[in-house]
Figure 1: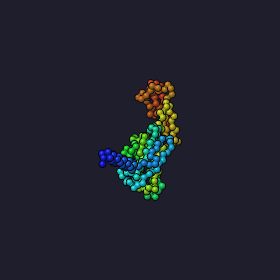
Figure 2: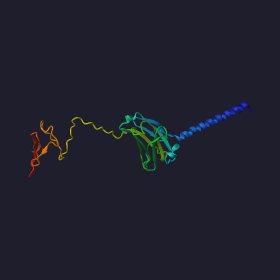
Figure 3: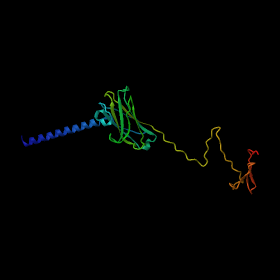
Figure 4: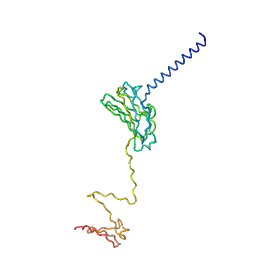
Length: 243
């Protein structure tokens, strides 16, 4: 065999091995990062809901630690805008499925970022007919806006019974209304009938303007208040003290 034929044979073998390795890498990558249909979507505080469906085929997966290939899939959800745009709102994620007999069950884990290795910011893994629900409040610490990965685990599911995912912007906990600062003369709130009342009665102009304890005296028989040396007496006109 000539050197030229041997060289071309080796080149062909190397090319074949490279193509096979590339195909295997892509195949394994697809199996390990199976995506929902569609693979991604964006949700704004005032925009339309996002909907996707599962594409996994099983078998069952206990949780994310055993979630590889067709027994789970992911949807990339982007919350647009800033946290201030989401004030009083939240992203409401629902994973539901048609078989509600209890023989089908999915779990959902939401991660910050575009991979399932990002920080876990929400999850739902309850048993029963579902649905699984996760709420994201962009104004909460560690949440914010941006890209999130909604990872759905086929905990107990048959291929024909695929889940449907929805993400909707809904009203959240209402923001507290700031207490207005009182004015210079705030209007008092009327008290209910029968409520005990306390009132202050001020002396007329020119009386007792410079008087105070201990420069005043009280006649314990009449309860009249006398300011010594001023000639001013404040009488008790309500009741008399009996001897």
